[in-house]
Image 1 (cartoon, rainbow over the protein chains, first blue to last red):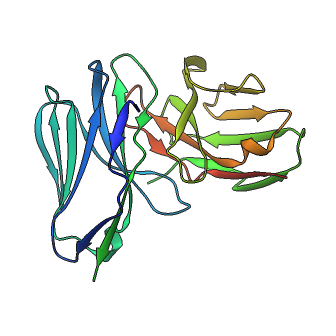
Image 2 (cartoon, helix red, strand yellow; image 1 turned 180 degrees about the vertical axis):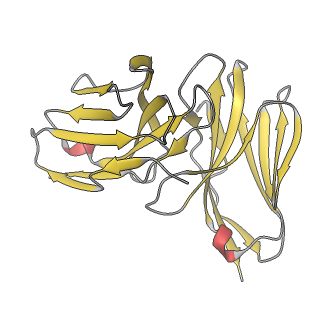
Length: 111
Length: 111
């Protein structure tokens, strides 16, 4: 079992709808959580970081964290075709430097 | 805003050759990370440096070594290259243990 699990998809969402991406992690010592967007052949681009339980909103993106359930999610409102990409969930343990990534969810927004 | 710079962007080497990848972090960032991403896989942490000292180590082969210099740039040296080393190599930087920002990557092909 991977430390960070994501549904690999593909997840297909109509344009303008809400895309919901989920991630679970196994290490209870994890303290920092990140969502990256990666287009094919490109580098991961940081979208959101979240450190405490609850919701964090930034524009069309909302990250949700539930440490008790070891669950983090990303909601994308008013999805656009340009949101089509692979979304990587990454987790960092307290005191550690490295990010541990999930396998990514491929999201397709259909016009 | 200035981003992480990596060179070269593409590199073709033969088996058993040596390769050196360079990374220039975002100005004022003091921590550098190296990740390897194989085809269809998530990024895997190799090694990190904080203030020119190795700060964390992941699944980096003994054939690989890295260092961070006084100007904070970092180099990843890879020797006795194998076909399986073909991958995208990303450098990321951060200020302390804050959010990591990725460079464009170096695509290494070993033939």
